[in-house]
Image 1 (cartoon, rainbow over the protein chains, first blue to last red):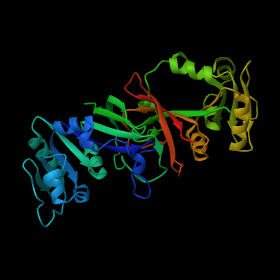
Image 2 (spheres, rainbow over the protein chains, first blue to last red; image 1 turned 45 degrees about the vertical axis):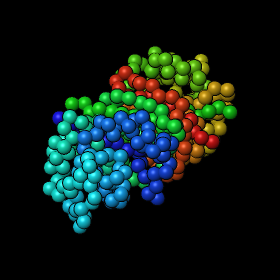
Image 3 (cartoon, chains in turn orange, green; image 1 turned 90 degrees about the vertical axis):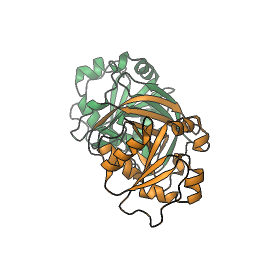
Image 4 (tube, one colour; image 1 turned 60 degrees about the vertical axis):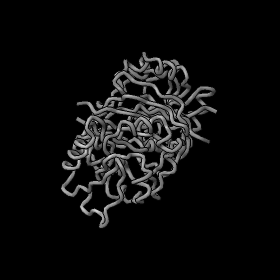
Length: 185
Length: 185
């Protein structure tokens, strides 16, 4: 079955945004995601995408999604409020607004991904809900070598112990570290 | 001037103890610290030690400190309440209970360390106070590949942004990662 892969950038003290809502201090210093080696590998491995409503909105530009989004695959947006106008779709890119809950979104995304992976692009609320459910198979953290001292935590709302294995660690251009973990089953 | 070097084990979600006060899930799987390569290097590099009162108490066994403690150097304990009986000292090991604050403890420890480093062995309150003051030169985090979901945070009580550079990353036996950072000045 398709693996669920997710991750985000995080400070040493666990924040994915500072107190002003900025994630500038967490920049990896990489080029555009799709031009990096790991970006290319991720895009090639991805059979379906999951995202939350806010993440969808942040990029709700018909030209971006249908023509220029890095993942031209079926996209599953978990939301109780689908947009009034269905966004433009592309050759491989379709949108499904899943209104009947996380389990349904997981099942649909895995079915669509087939032998590839489901990539969860965020936001943190969706990642946290998937972790809490024990549904995350691989976790990727871009650890930025900075303490932010406050802000929004990446791992809030997860209240149980979840064990992983470290699968890789690679330096990033601005001094951060790309860490990958697999869930222990 | 002597560098201040500190660090602790931490979970992916930033805890140094779980909700029950246990740090078992953060174990590195290494042998006794003094028998590891990095332990030997740290002991050789250390000219003075700083610790908080609780950390002192956890090991307040005269035989341990004077005879068997890995750091046989001047030890500075930051506390308003020195013990009634001065602990036994060794050939290189002395105890100074610093009652006039963190700045004084830093100054005394740096003077004692000379050309070597000041190693801060904990606890988290002391580490946090040193970070907040901008006094930490090198930070070592043993990152355990586990989410604890709750407990005591390593980086609480630090409310400002502090930038570091990654200086090394090494795998640990049980799947964790030994991360070292230098403060950007």
